[in-house]
Length: 375
Image 1 (cartoon, rainbow, N blue to C red):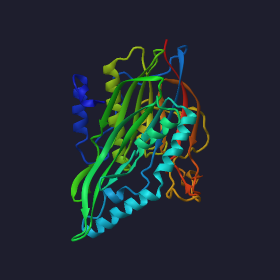
Image 2: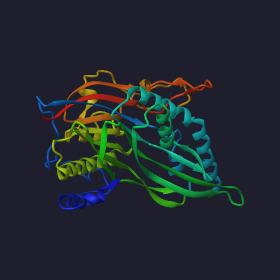
Image 3: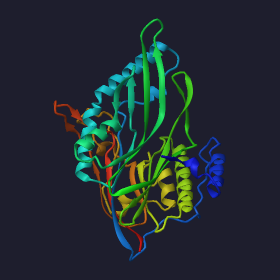
Image 4: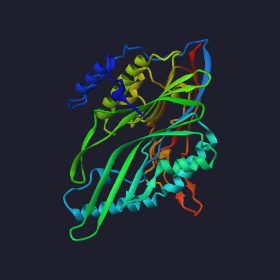
């Protein structure tokens, strides 16, 4: 992993200083949108060599209300203790082992080039791992013949606290979630960059002030035939002004890094993630202005394509169609066409023991893109 600070020299240093100043305000107008002139968006070059990329994005879903951990009532140790006990009960009820296995089977059937993953949970209780989504996914992919896929991960929002009742029991809570990108053996990973957003949500976290971390993960990939691909994976904040600020940071830094690396031949670009923004609104609109095209629209897909959300992952009565939001995306720069898009893992299934279960409260959004960026 190469931290973005490694690149903060020259133009990138000036950009980083600008981002810091812009993010020090308190309102939605603090980071105004300005079109980029560093190198412009990557576009399709007609007559160039076609390169196909199959990419997907999936929010793994934590499986319980994370705000119970992040926004917990600080007034009573007994209340905190009961809420934390509830978190572990909800985590167990979400059947993480079965959910991750279902995801691994779908990935093994699709054999995509890339999968951007968000809300990748690790949870421990008193030194014992309750769930680790990425370790479980790694094990399942290996068993399904995908051991040659590489998994590049970054942890966010670490929690390591002891919660106790006066004169009673205590629980040692260790938690983090984060971003990861699964990469097929077609690619060599030349760069792995993590960009922590400066526009973040400040919270009280079990007795201490903390911030709800959000970030973007960037990979520079090279195929043996000479095709390069720049990939970004992110999960933006739920609050509109913060996710717009975060999208602005992503655009500025990604474009600056692209200019600095001066890849030759040019790289195709793909952006995967949960933007928490419906098509045409705030962060989504900003990314469109910056040249990041929506693969769903480019494919001519006329369905609403909802990818979120299911409120109860053990219920057979809900669906993405009834909640009806498309907030998960595969965006691109440099693709001449998008052959197909779809939402997978968008229905419940029965586990081996007969339990009704959704793999996540999000669907897996998939796009097959034909790039045209090199001779």
